[in-house]
Image (cartoon, rainbow over all chains, first blue to last red; front, side, top):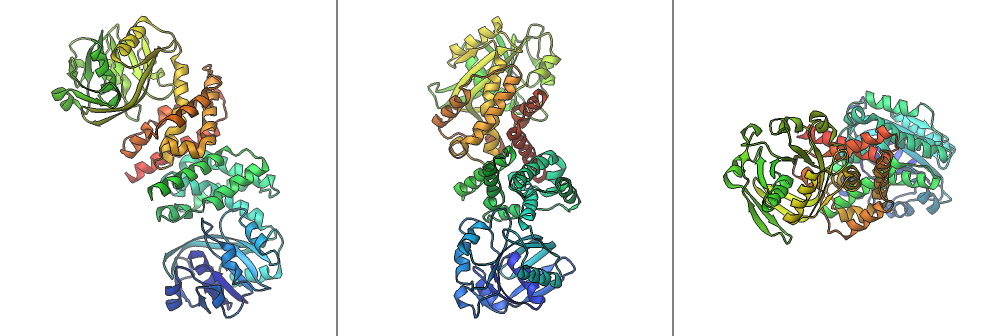
Length: 308
Length: 308
């Protein structure tokens, strides 16, 4: 299996390096980190049992046209923020039989790519992980790492199963599901509530938020569930309790949106919250808590631009 | 008429100094600013036609026990923030015939004082003004200045009328109303929407907020109207349009809550937003936008304490 990872941030580097350990041929397309990754590869330090390792990609390219051969699978691992043109990044890298994996946060993130490449297999993926790129070619894995993969808009192909097996072999749990969109909404319950609250509070971790404002968290999650349900992606009845209980058991945790905010990087507001709100309005679901959070995030971003 | 102003912040200094110009005998009880005010009085600079003036109080005291005589009227002009003990401040200053005027933002701010001094006339007041204390004894009046006064819980006494006339004589418009509580809810429409948004956005002025998020502002205002209505303080049908139009015509304006936030001072979150939310729940009105804003303000305050 030949895999091309587009994006050498935390997610692309981490999962690409694991696939390489599972005897997959992994090349990378690097953008701002190209010089470092080309010269030195990527070093990963994990706080988990995975330990430390070095990842030397089969090929490191700055542009897809430089690739020696077309990959079987492209892992597109870029943050969905303003200015990220996924179609452009994919166009030169894709071969006739290449499957595209979108590993990203948010909901309803697939349609743009599906429309641009209607003849290609599209796999949607979610990473449940706490991992940071501390410098070009330097990745710090703090915790977790489980993946969920499935074909979009539904189903489970042989390629998806093979990819999930490769990840399992590399040491991270990977759930292959025929209904990845429902799983995506499930992750969104957590992200659409904790992420904006972490930023709008000015930088609180999950524990402070949950112990003081659990009713608000539950109200937001209930709205996300109602949207998912209206769109045919019914969530299990106990999902909110399960996510609340799970978060109570987690150590205090800064959301990735908060880390982006604190580092002055663009935030995934549209993928996580904007797409959720638009889906809610399209479905005719009343979502006043989400509306308020989304409006506040847009004000926060306006303020960042005007003071930047 | 003998008036005691408690609090030599922006509001107390400004309105006390105007009453003194209208031949009212005005003493002040100063707290942290006592030394400066005792030695030099108070200087007010206004950007309006009022110009500049100096205010030398009849008496400046640090404690009410030092007062030469009990006042006819006490103007209590302190911000309603944590740790402000109004009952304690009033107890030693009040005489048997003293009326108490509460000049403060927020809703449902009167009951604590009414309960502590059940035999005294209680006047509730609102200031529509942009004024700042730039240093001890230094007041900068930027714009506006109109007052609304009325007896609590309703009605209009001779003393209230006389006080309103004195303010009018001093050059600020003063509406005497028999239904001050309805007026208080009306001001709350504006304050409960723009104030938290100005802080949670990270510092936007009213123009940026209104031009980008008018639907949210309208949704919040509609919830405040619904609470007021449920409690018997029905607002005029066109009130939201009127406040929106009025704000569009104002120059970009930083709310007083934002000025407090930026200066690291305690914010009037409870008086403006907390009391509104509690009133809404008591009245059984659904207020998801206000619930979200209030929860976020509490998170913001928690964050300020944990980083302070």
